[in-house]
Length: 400
Image (cartoon, rainbow, N blue to C red; front, side):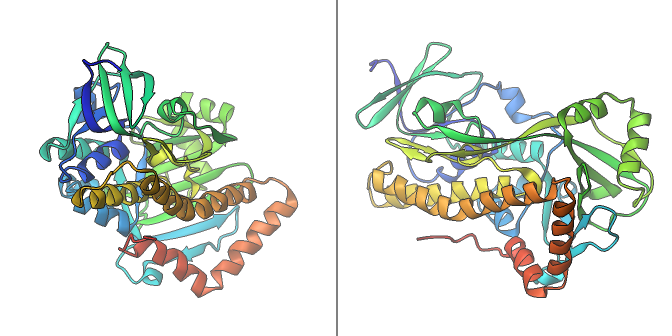
């Protein structure tokens, strides 16, 4: 391995929210950390609007608070998620999940993804959390005994005792370490945008399963909401290309004018829906976090929260090893991280897949089954309380 390589204890590939949160979490360990990302500094500091509004649980809010990221968000950027209603087709009676079921003032929070990214980068800079190699891609991986070399596309080379993949669900870093992943293409795409509403949303989130579409409405401050529309890709592409006035009329009709007329208030963003489950999360000198650890369908809004769970679980172990002078990249530590995160994420991944299959079914038996499921759940207060408390519980402790 080249003698000219710059040596680090840990190299994080990806400076999205997951990679930056990981770097900030390790800032006080005394370990040298490198963060590599293809975006330039200007984009990392001020990411563009991407349409995604992140539903954060109370536990995720607490973790971001501990990292010093939450305090950097402007209060106007944080919208209350008070209650949630789940509709099936034209049934006027939704399953209602109330903040009272969770014993809190609200179920959670909604924060724009691009603002979380910007504040995570700001915290990274403020905490002096590591060396940033921006505008750089990893072009090759050279594995050696007890360390890994990362070749960058600008000719530089880094070595690290531990490489952490935080480069998304289609992680090229994970693949470079020989880890395959199973993908489930749901055959649909998601269009997201902000809409101005004629009527008050009362900070209630909607999930609406129609016969041939899935709709969500996420309440934002200023009587705006994020519209999330899931349809076959060709139909989503058609919607994206409509003139704004025509788009407004069609979206208002799709939401059955339940909150009056809706008017486009942002650009429209489209994302294909693909779930990803890696064969494993760790290898020698390697671990995956965030979407690189599990790529979720967004219907249950677990993706970003699961990413923070993975960061907390791995950072906690590295911090403990660093305090006592132990090897922070040893096999037992990485395997323990994998077991903890798999034990927590696998039920959610499987349940989310089952929900998507049930609630996108256009068959008559499927429609009857989901309506019966929602009505049964509505009549079971313990079930509603379980869902609500999973959102409002401020603890994030799944330690072995």
